[in-house]
Length: 204
Image 1 (cartoon, rainbow, N blue to C red):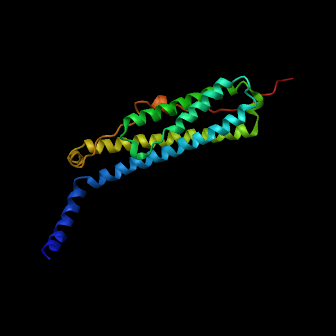
Image 2: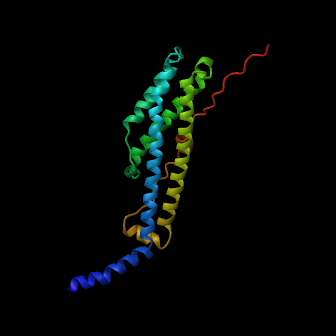
Image 3: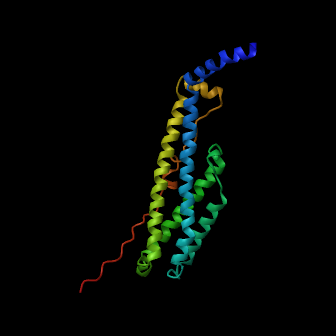
């Protein structure tokens, strides 16, 4: 009976303490970071799914560009071997490998797109144009989601560094997060320029 009475008294006090010390806000921002990163991963996975279709669509045209097609295929394969989730954000080594693989795929796609400019027939192919539209949309969404992730990490890091919430963060083991969208932003988020327009017909 006494234990029950103590619990009735203590639980509200604990709840008030956790709310006032910023614990709930730290929890909210931590979940926000994980959610935004998960959404970013979804877009990376979407891009990876488009690559095999893209390679197949250009294969018949780019008979002299096997090296570039091989680079794209290998970069896509490497991306597929590195599986990360939002729970891996505190694993710098794995995240470094992930971001490096994504950067390699971005570079390979950029080279493929640049070379495709030399193939007017390819650029007029309906399937190829559709894939380019999807790729452009996916690259835009990657950039958008990475921007949201960067902002979420900044908000989280700010609150775990501020007083008095920094005390709560230390008590419960919350530390600042690495913002993978800042230190390597130019390398990782560089997206291929996708601008496919048919050449103007020659003037008579």
